[in-house]
Length: 475
Ligand SMILES: Cc1ncc(COP(=O)(O)O)c(C=O)c1O
Image (cartoon, rainbow, N blue to C red; front, side, top):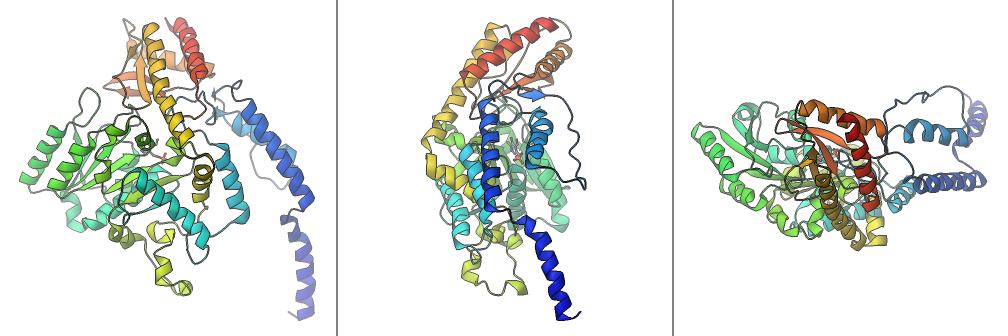
């Protein structure tokens, strides 16, 4: 093609593609609309239901362009008003989080400026923020300075990174897979078994350690199982403990488990995805021994109340993490080895990624930890307040929780499981407050998970009133 023709085509394409650079006047208008939308959303949360069991429609991408207003309307109608309202203080099911506003602003700034945070050479500032956030986590969990870590999209991916390091340090491959044993509690989050499958350890032997009446791993049973496996010529490889189980909020006896793992030269992993940040509260003593873990996962999108999409993993053995994640290529030749080691990409499977460090760094800089700790303490008290109110209504409760999750059921004289299920259905149909259910010790139970930063005493009162009305319909 001749140069004049190229220039002609380029000029046409420039005009067409220019639409992607929104002009300043429109930017101002759009930001105002988004700001009004956000304020309206947050301002009406208390009056809005926490759950609407309707499916989403009409989100198809077509050739027909839409106005910004109609896109916001569509989002409100089809996304926000359907399913669980996860930003609501009345979300008391699964594991709530919330999404503090300053983190949303950080996400906006990260997306506008779009620094390449995975590689130090590309953005020393953004990579330093990612590393700084990890360093802060090391101090929270008393991990040594020379441990490593990275941010991830959440607990499931953090678990993959931790288990891959465990696998590589212990050289669990080929014929060793079938002889290696992993010790779990029945209460581990399902991302644990899923991670083992994904990283090629589907064929390891899994032993479930029996639990006490508070759903904590019995260390005597753990020791017995390990001894039996050694005698049978198997290779005990990893123990997974949980600091805050999903269903019951239980913290396993971490210090004792750490000792057992050390005595048998096993990898000790702690899943603190939900419960980890309660280490900053009056519950600190329950976390004793967490600092002895070989790897630990924690989710800032849970206990730091950040928007979904930020987890973290810490690992003591940097060589084990680098073994599977450090890589170089011809097109990376401008990056020195020294800077490579400061690059999050070398400690994670991700290369190009969202600059998620900013959504944690900015709120920590702006708010400090005091309101976060106060919020966590509040959740601990609210679950007790909730339990007291449920007892007044005649409900049975699970054991006293370590953290902010508990469960309950109504002692119907006949068909208790069926009727508690009906009660759950009524609660979902009402939707003013959202709760979820589980099966614990073969009993259908309704869970209480208090973790949304917006959950206040008034929300628990509303939940109790709603449960009372629903119970009357089932009785
Ligand atoms: C204890 C625990 N571990 C791991 C996970 C998985 O985390 P994510 O959903 O962020 O992948 C969860 C999620 O609720 C959890 O509660």
